[in-house]
Each structure stands twice: as C-alpha cells, then as structure tokens.
Length: 360
Ligand SMILES: [Zn+2]
Image 1 (tube, helix red, strand yellow):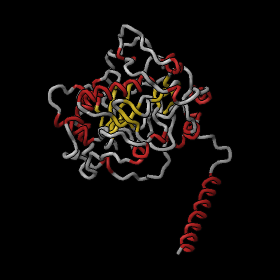
Image 2 (cartoon, rainbow, N blue to C red):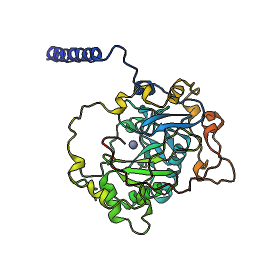
Image 3 (tube, protein in one colour):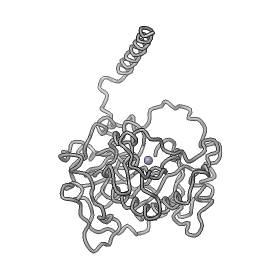
C-alpha cells in the first residue's frame, strides 16, 4: 500500500517537474521580469514620502504604512499575505471606520487585503489594490473572542449572496450591514465602495430617507463576502491618476438592472488567458515605480506600522492642529498633508460602463 502510494505520488511530481520545465522553456530567453514578481518580493515599504503613483490597477506607492495586526476594533485577516499596507490616509480611514462602526453596533472590522508594502501588481488575486488606496473589509463582524493567527488564516468568510439568483440571502443580511456600508460611504475621502450586485439591490430596495450615499455603492462581480472601499488620490501624489466620478444618481436604475440579466454571468470564453497583472513588466508601470522598488526600506515592519489611534484623517481637515505620525514612520509623515479640503465636489461624468471581469 505504502509503496503504491509513493510511486503514484512520484509519478505525479515528476510530471509536475516536466510541465514546469516545459513552461520555463516556452518563455522567451530575454523575458523581462514581471512587475508582480518584483513587487511581490518586497517585504517592507519604500521609506520615502508617501505617494500613490499611477492608477488603482496599474501603479505602486511609496511611504506605505501597515495597520497593526490588532486594534481595539479590528483584526487583520490572512496575515501571511502581508497585504496590510496602504497610504497613511487609507490606513487612517480604516481605523476611523472601525471606531465609528463599533459605535454604531458593529463589533469590529475583519480586514482583508489592502496592498503589498510597495503596492504594484500582486502574484494572486486583485487587479487593483496597487496604489495603497483600496481595502477589502469582510461582511462578517469581528467575533467577540480574539482570533488566533491560525484562525485568521483559515476562517471562512460568510457568503452573503445566493450564487444562482444573485440576490442577498435574507437570513444573513442585517440592518447593521447596511449601517456599516452607509458609514463608510459617508466619508468624503471614500470615492466608491464595490459590492456584489445583490448587495447593491438589497440597499436599493430597503434604504429609506437619505439615499445620496448609494451613488458610491457600485455593483461588481465577486464582493459577496467582503466589500471593497476605495479612497481618492491623496494630496502629495501628483502622479496619482483619479478615476471617473460616480454618477450623481443612486445607481438603482438601468445600470443595476443589467446585472440581473444573463449577460454579465456568461461563462468566460477564455478563462485561462493571462490577466493584465500577470503580464505587466516595469515598462508598463509608471516610470516612478522603479524608484519605489529601489528605495530603501524601514528597519522593520513595526517601524512603519501606523499607531495613529485618534490621529485625524488627513482629508478630514480643516483641523486646528496638523496631524502627525509617529516619529518612526518618517516615510509617512513627510507625505501626510497637514490640511486638505476633501469636501469639494467631484465632477460628474457619464455612467461608467461595467469593466471586464475580474478586477476588484
Ligand atoms: Zn478589493
């Protein structure tokens, strides 16, 4: 029995090696290094002034800070991925949301992927999350007992949407979920929140009174166990490329109806085709990303961990005193603006067409 198993395993691994060699041989001899390999290998941020460079799905960022693994009102999930990094303003918004949500009755945030230490394309997963301004937050509230590191790696998130009907499972959706999304969408620095179309529909069908915030809630594939919070380009990032503003209406009309037709759910004709993030080389990214890659890092992850606590979010200005970062995060402090007005109206551009899947 033992011998049989070993020989069958042996054959399988030999086959795997041969396939690997074939794949290697198929690559052009002078293939440029892929950006996702270079950025994926960085364990620490670039210790220079905080700055987002490029677009959400094609860029990088400097001066990143990490959210602590644990806070009074949050826990970082999947810690081994090392994706708890973001622009200081992003980390501050997440911490603020965790506090406000707790006050609203949501026990705390389970935080999914933010960005790699220097952003850039990732080895797995997301198309966006490249410039430190995107964060995934679970739609599962933080449990009352602290999660061990093993639980954070392995615990499953709750699937909120029926995969056949694309509607929210009514037994799982609570008013607290709605309040959490409303709270996040209410922040001026949050430009959009991506959710599954079923969740958008649930909000469209149930939110009474103030519905203005619904315009920031955008339907997208996936996002059925977490929501994706995106903030705008921050001051001090001249090379950050803003996205189109959301339409001014609540988005509950025609664009949402499209999601409940067959079209968005047709099987991908070419599911194995490489994705943009798989092909990107340094030449495809903004040229400043080379300097981000080459910049020195801080002494340790702890040295670049954001302990802002009640430090006001930069964009929540005007503040009487300049917000400050701990001295250890010199990288972030230089880039964190002292006073910014994020309350200015964003221009209204036409209804953005749904982008091709995946991409979050
Ligand atoms: Zn996301």
